[in-house]
Length: 494
Ligand code: FRU
Image (cartoon, rainbow, N blue to C red; front, side, top):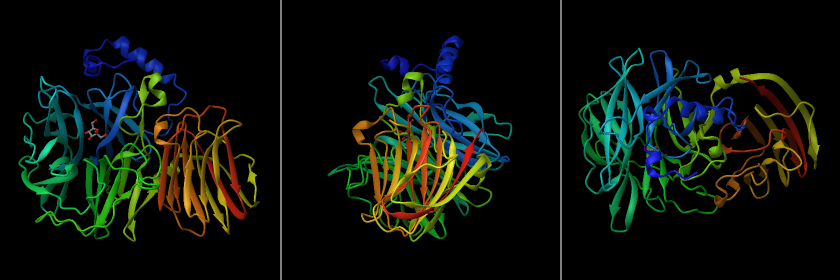
């Protein structure tokens, strides 16, 4: 179906109830609906927004176009949870209903202040010539969950030298000052470049422009950095961003757009100087973008990403919905590298368990009870000598999703060539990255239509959607040489 502009900018409030019911019925009938991931009830989900802990609950909002699987006029949809595992849908939080956000309530973040949750976001507007005018806006949520928008934008102008791609404020507090970083496209003599600019405030309402964050990430760094985030972890400064326009380099940057981080000394917010190391991708898989983090009451830094990408069709489009969010990951830093582990609380999803301990003698093997559609699988391969060692998921005669370590070439490889229906085929169906280890430990979460693979306690993560047939449920372990294997599988039931 074509999605002309009139349809993309229709608001849900204008649509008859029966149209929504029909759409919802189509969505509910889709065999690829997830069981333990946050997904839209209808339409398209993109970036996580306003990830926070307030009034005894975690809050996680997301970018939402309710009326179909396309990027139409965006809302913030609200979900909340006591444990980061069981999420409750709370409905629309912010609607594109005023002059400051007529063409979408775009991404942003949340921060608690004076007993209220402040939501800062980009109001996207277009004029009669379809020229974009972005505003950085503020709203507040009280303990009853009521949300009120400020009538005026708190940042009205785009800074000098920046294009209309200026959005996605991330707000945080350092000592008694608030800072807000905003993703931007800056004009330079060598063409446009991605950057992050920042503001300072004492009350979240009046913001003073400070300038650019001065990074040295300049070569092949893209033309626009969306969804920046910043925090310190174990004394180091970490900036996340999603650059658009990076060219592939070897195994790296194979997706339409990237998402990664810089680690270094904490940013000096007097000068804007950030001394840091290389840009590193957060996820080595296929669909991952626009992640956002929060510090929770336990002091953990937790990340959630969009398990999707811009400009890509999705297999579920024909059923009237698209995309979901990743599982929450806890971040730590080791040797200037972010380590990402699935949060502890996900153990709550574990049900019936099966185990195996054996030696694989240059063979591919199935084990009793190792199969399914929604599960957590942990496995450990030791005594690695040569060839490949790994696992095939959602396997049948025709289908399989393969993950392995190529020992001599020191590469982790995810292959979804035979995962079923495809989307984004033009970007290839294999992802790999360099990896050195003496043993391979995998923690894998398989939902109805996604796979998240955490390698060696979060050293690398590979995330992908898969659109596999219901009957493809096999799990097969394989090794080209003799290796020892220990594996545990927990069924996930919700
Ligand atoms: C990233 C993004 C953001 C923007 C939002 C709009 O996916 O393009 O930059 O705020 O999506 O939905």
